[in-house]
Structure formats: C-alpha cells, structure tokens
Image 1 (cartoon, rainbow, N blue to C red):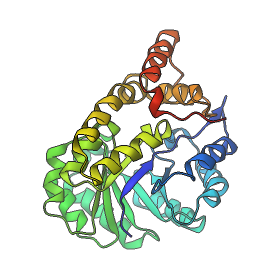
Image 2 (image 1 turned 90 degrees about the vertical axis):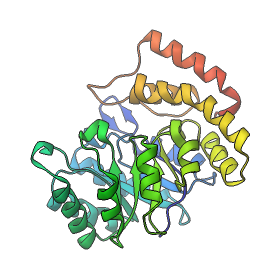
Image 3 (image 1 turned 60 degrees about the horizontal axis):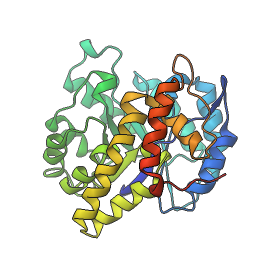
Length: 298
C-alpha cells in the first residue's frame, strides 16, 4: 500500500449533541466525485476525542460503506495504551477500514521515552489487522519525535507512513532522505503543502480539504507537473484561510466556513463552539478572497 495524494481529514457533523452521519454522507457524495486519494475518519478534525467508543464504531458502520473502492479508508486511532488501540483497530478493520492513523500516546508523556514509543508502535504494527501511520502532532501530545525515532519506525513493514502535523520541514527532509522508498510522509497542514511536497512528501492529510478540496488537489497537481510559480502562488492564497480555520478559530471556524459554502457541517461539540460575530465576519471576508477556488453545492 502506497500513500500519496490528498486526503481530507474529515469533520464529524453534530446537531446539538448528536452526531449526524447522514450529513457526512452528503459531503462524501461530492468528495467521491473528486480525485481525492482517500479519507481520514475520526482524526483530530473529526473530533474523535469528543466521541464515545460506541459513537466511533457507529459512525464507521454508517459511513465507510459509502467510500468507493479506489479511495483509501483511514481511521484515526487515538488511545493511550496498546490494548484499547488494538481492540479499536480490529473493530474498524471488520467495518472496512484499510489503514490507521495512530496518534503518539501521551497521557503519561513525562514517564515515557523514545524507546517506549518505538516499542508501542512496533507492537501495535506487529498485531494490527491494517497498516498504520504514525501521527506526529506535538502541539497536542507534547511529544516531538526525532528523525532517528521516525527512521526506526519506518523500518517496520506494517508502518507505512507518517502524518507530520508539526510542519517541521527539517524533520521531513531528514526522514525522507533516509527512509525506505515505500514509507510515505504526508504533511498535516495545508499551509506547508507546497514546501513539504518540494521536500519529497507524498501528499497531505488536510483539514482545509474539507473546505477547498479542489484547491488542495490543484496545488498537489501543479507540483507534480513542476509548475512551480503557479503552485507557489496558490499556496500563498491558501495560507490566510487555513490559519483562520485551524489555529485562530479551530474546528468551530472550519465548520462555520463549511456552512457558508453549503455543507451541513453542524457545530463542534462543547466545550468548542462556532466563532463569535467578529470571527464569522473575518472568515466571511477571507472566503470572498478565495471565492474562485471554492465550489458551493447544496
């Protein structure tokens, strides 16, 4: 299995406090017509931390059958111990998941060292029913994996890649220059898609692809075609909106922006919320700046 291209890190729509898989299915109806490589369900953007175990499995049961065979189905796996991670992956695989994005366990981060993290990933990869990707997200976990740690993990045949949400280009270059050819590194931020691709990244797992999937695909294709100036220009246009719907206003900002483009994105779960009136106006202004990149649908 080779990972490459653009993968939306899909949202989970909520109506008040109820997950609405039927709204996600409507989003997938559009996305399935695009040359996206696959999807990540139940990742950070999917608010997996806000879901119960029962809800996670219910959502997978409802939405995975709607994904065409040519698109890869990746599920987020964000547990702090080996046993619950394995249990979840076994359930997910039975429902059709083809790979797992595994966040670095971090609840006891002050008691863990690189050797323990390597052992965790290797033991999980030994027993997992699907290939796994390392999810490197220091802003959430408080753990920065070193180049050497990622290179050790890349040697395992069932660890097929890494999503780097740190935006660490030096780390990406260090890994890509020495890892096995079949190990894929994907950026976790649309703000670094262009430079990451220039470093040799295979693509991106992107929150912004919920909102502007065509633009993310276009940027990826421009780089593949070596149209450097057009790619650089498009990258610069995406950065302000990406910042608003990730760092500045987070999931509430992303879901609000999606609503403005006709998606039934719902609200984030408490304690998160949609932006206030000032934040909404800021997002509205930026959406106008990229209106030619966004296709609305009902």
